[in-house]
Image (cartoon, rainbow, N blue to C red; front, side, top):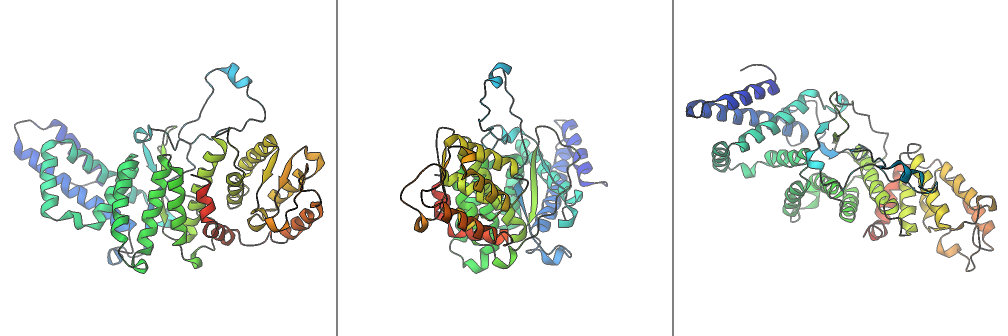
Length: 420
């Protein structure tokens, strides 16, 4: 049987559909052909993705890849059912984002992987992955095939094949079965707990990030944040002085209800931006999806994180400023430690003026804070605030990636506290 792996599967699938019920020889032939195609495609995918573990078979691909959800992909656009309700929305209301991290129907939404040839993510690699999944589905859709496959896997001691476990985990993520993927990842994480960190640091980093993405899609934001921060702590410092990631090519067969997946190189240069974005999405949920609560630290943390992908986050920052104006107050003692973006500094300089309205802000660290508070800024502290802003402008050329990694490591406890 010749042709691409996907065409071979289509042929096997058609033979399986048309096979006579009284033709066991044909059935066995289809079964073994499907098993062989599954092993070929699943191993090709797994050995390419985990190229460091299969260095001898992957000349030219020295960096491992990690399958993750594209958190920026919009799964659904939320529309107002009744026009008259939309008209009654206050102009100061904060719009909710349209991602669906807590949508229970995610597993029914088709997934697409993005091609990125600069990372070695070719259409052929994606085809092998998707064909391996299709073979697995076919083998487990037939009770006789399932029984025979389980017998073979047991006889082969396939539970010791790390590449197969990794493929199965990625398959669950691809299918949107985040609960099952999370269980498998937690088991792998538990097995690594007794191993020396130096030996398993990169594998642990990969597991933690996939766990974080699964927690996020299950709307378990505190756990997603914890796993992400643990992953950041495992990133070598030398890898996180980054240039912006290469943009992957868009799949040719997308639709309005498509989930997007990414295969990212396992380097700090590519994964730190993903971590920052995941945390920002968590804080977006915390700050904008609970209108009745006021949590300045959560909002402040979010503004710090916005600096990485500036100016793309300008719209979100505008929503944050609207929220502060609506609250009438804002306190964030870490402002002058971690915010160096000139546009953000200028906006807060304006908020401190009478022209901005009756907004009470307190951004100075505790040591510089005056006891009496008045409208605008702390009474007697206007000069201190002005000087602090001028000094902060001098820091605008600092490395944002280095600063944000320092923020994620040093402020881990308070980051977690405000997502509980």
